[in-house]
Length: 263
Ligand code: PBE
Image (cartoon, rainbow, N blue to C red; front, side, top):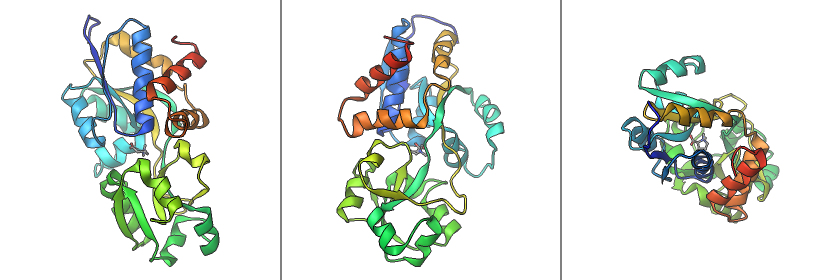
């Protein structure tokens, strides 16, 4: 699309990291003279994806494994086929940000120690443990139903807000949850992430996904974010919001100052 006085609309899914990444994109574009509208925390993966395809938003942060296993689930695409699949819908990944944010199953160190668990397959021996999973994980193609079949697990589950999961785990109301590996709280709670010993989860490399209505000169600005974040950096930013309670906008501006591409 052509550059114009058009307002660029950035969206996000409703969890800390996605808010921060959307804010980083928005502030970087604003620093380069673009007018932004924010529609953050729109909804889960499929809602946000549809909003992008319907041009209600022009871009949002997404993850490679989520495209392959949740959005295009059943099509059996490889990561090499992703650009063409996206192009067929007039979408494009404008920048790979440089880190992987995977799902992992987490238990407390205490539970892991008491039951001698180190890997997901160990859960098969403990069917009485209770699992509290984020709503999306309970339903996705790369979520619990498929994980459960893959490992032969039978635990009972409840759905919960991801932001409350680690507190629930530490408080003992649940025994297992789906962690996001770049979550800032992981340093605070004494948790063990079980090894995915039967290689269920794909990589979830973070990227900025845009439609063709994003002006080319805006896409060029966002390309400066290619490889700009690694896992420790993203986890520290998530921590600023989830633990230190600064706003996603503040965490984003702190980050942009450190990389010197926007003030
Ligand atoms: N993830 C982990 C999920 C949530 C966090 C990146 C795999 C996703 O948004 O697709």
